[in-house]
Amino acid sequence: MSPRNSELRDALHAELAFHQAEFNALRSEIVQWLEAERQYLNLCLVAIAAGLGAFPFIVQQKAFVVLLLFPFIFSCNIDGNAQYNTSVLRFGKLSP
Image (cartoon, rainbow, N blue to C red; front, side, top):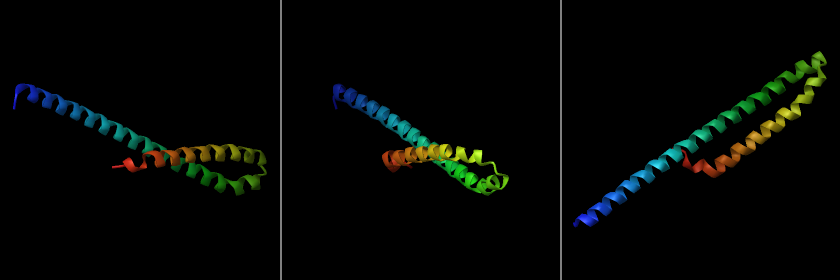
C-alpha cells in the first residue's frame, strides 16, 4: 500500500471515529431528554391524582375557589403529555 493511500485511510478512519462519537453523544442526549420527559409525565399524572384525591376534601370544606385552579393544572398536564408523545414518536426508536 502506498503512503498516500495509507494517509487517506487513516484520515477516513479518524473521521469515522469522530462521527461515531458524535452520533453516540447525540443518541445519549436524546435518550436523556426522553427520560426527563417521561419523569415529567409521571409528575403530571401524580398531580392529576392528587387533585382528584383532594376533590372530596375541597367540596367538604366548601373551598370551591380552589376548584378554579384545576383547569389550569390539567391544561399544563395535557400540554406536557402532548410534548412527551411528540418526542416519543420522533425519537422513540433510539432508546438503547
